[in-house]
Length: 151
Image 1 (cartoon, rainbow, N blue to C red):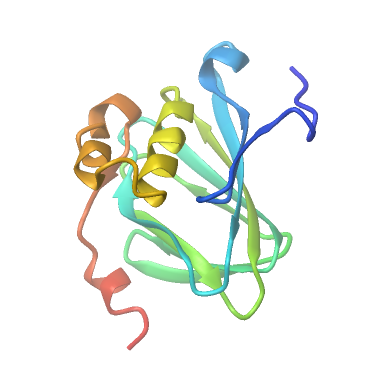
Image 2 (image 1 turned 90 degrees about the vertical axis):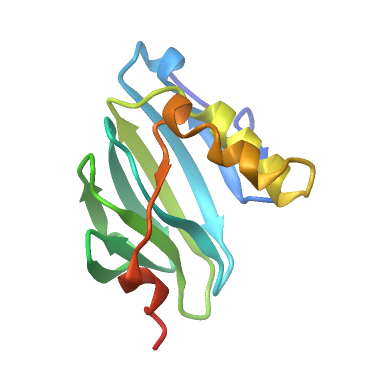
């Protein structure tokens, strides 16, 4: 499968570029690229019961919660988050962070990113996003570590 940069769908409000989804990869993976403005939270604490998530930082820096640890990733850094591990992330520093994400053993997720796009634009209620946790294997969780990260 080949996805040309000029053919990839970009969701402007969320900064997500959709690359490959589960149906496109014979069930193997889903992948997208995201650009986070400085200080912008990419995702609140959540976990995937089935999928592992891989982060590869293309540029900038990303602050990541993994379990109960906070780590900062920089250009060229790679992180694997296994299933059932709480994680969250946001841009760190004064430059945008560009990150390639790959989820393996995942459910199709492009519908989730399009739903998020609607929520970012104010066209979709966030409660609708919350109702899709089983459909997209995206389960929001509480994390005191993440809540207190700036103290």
